[in-house]
Length: 267
Figure 1: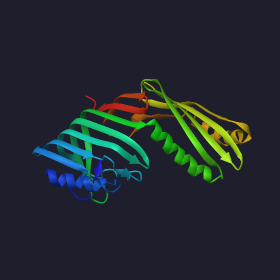
Figure 2: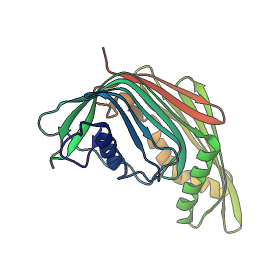
Figure 3: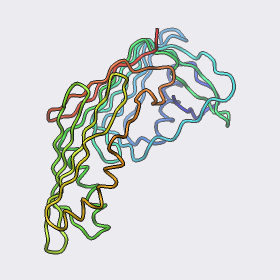
Figure 4: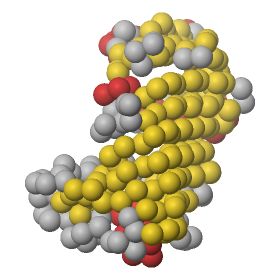
């Protein structure tokens, strides 16, 4: 869904591309044009392509308001594609590719009268998100260092090991090498995430082990948080997908962690 900076959805390719780009520019930084649109005969677009390669997302996308009043048919697109190679989301580098075929869009308005472009149906869609383990390790290290400095603790080294335990199962082992004054210690944290056949993700096997007095003290502070996480679950079907539904989710791990998902409209 896109909240457009106008009171209606444009009916030609150039104006539609400009409207979607203005919507994206609210939270995406990048110098190159982001959107291209090819039109056959309105309301049948050949394709809508969004290119976020090397863009930076400094904050979470703004919350899209709900449509108020009547929602009407807007147009159709043979292909809607989004590429985001080496995009940085709050400093974490990721690669993303989405392609959806036979997409129908509706249009509506929010409470302020601004136009909303809403995905109504998708015949077939595929999403792939990947990130290098080393990049994730560096990002976790930066976050951990910022948090540790508040407690006068230094983080000298972070090691991350992700392993696939099956097509929908992932384990993570984190080792922090920490120091305070002249004392050093290792802190090991582990967690497992499994996605079941109903697309419910569950966290389990959360553990913390620390060497020496400082490590034991750190794990003592972390364990209440880890215990609260252990057993928590989240239905991927509860994501704001509108009438779209997940059809499959897969996890693969090598030097790069890759999550792929298939989706579409029932029927």
